[in-house]
Image (cartoon, rainbow, N blue to C red; front, side, top):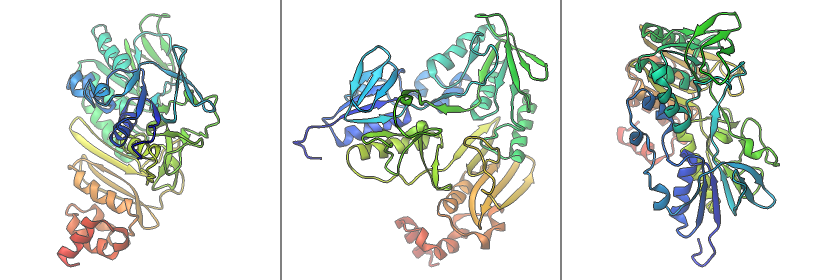
Length: 449
């Protein structure tokens, strides 16, 4: 950057993974820039860790993603309020307090919010929470716990089951109600999901599938007393946590011409359809490397990478965002699971589609150990690994999937216990053009394959 040139004014809406990473990159390359961050939260913390805080395994300081004086260290002007409107012609963001903030370059890092189902009484009853924010969700649940003995979790997604496990740790009687035919329907196939349904059942947390809630019972403005299903069955409770996934926060864009779908569309430079406005994180519909189209993979690492690359492009350092793919890893009651790529079969806005797989490989060597690989045209497009410390294997499969390597000659071995990098080196050597990084070239040369 020309040191004599006037620095641009950068405005970032959102202070979580994408927004914070972007601010760091902007300050690194433009020491004199004016950076304004708009956020309705004052501390920067890790949302994926909220369930551990809820369970009592972490305290608030251990949640922090950046130190409490982050904004001062990076000389960032903060506006702790909500952004409620956007005037793209005047390059202004409208704030909840009636003021505006002008920008030269704008980053939308507004994230997402819990998806609340359309259920009678869900907004009127006390004791009903999501698990997305520290103050209004996690801390509010903790303050409610002294008067709660029975909890119902609506939704069997990743957040829902983590919340259920946390509430069980707190000594509550917990029941999970899932609309879908199986739990974790946006992460796992049915076979692997059944393993975890059984694990939760053995640990005293029953999961009821195909259970559609229609009403939350109780008196208006008082605590919830139960959840009624479409079948008429009622589950008594005094606490409800909604864990049915998230939706991108698009309210800011309602009266704009920004091109959007499920999220806001961005190009390979994470720029929206309007010049000087970028997006990153859960709100950005960016390239999916397996699907080859715009998609939202609402993952913390994706938000971090997108925030950094968006900032570089805001600075004029043209940097292509290669794309992302879905990947989740979690451990429930001591059993780990990793899911990656197109391993979701359940239809939905961001679910599976017909024709994404044409072959599957499945392996069950022992109870609680499960491996499944999804193939399309002899390349890996997804996998699920349960139990047996699958981290190293996941890394190998991820490499092959990411590089779209034809695995026709090693398909059966992919499920074997002894699979390691050494075994795959001949395959990597055969596909040298897809492994151009220095470490791969040196590895192949060292072993002489």
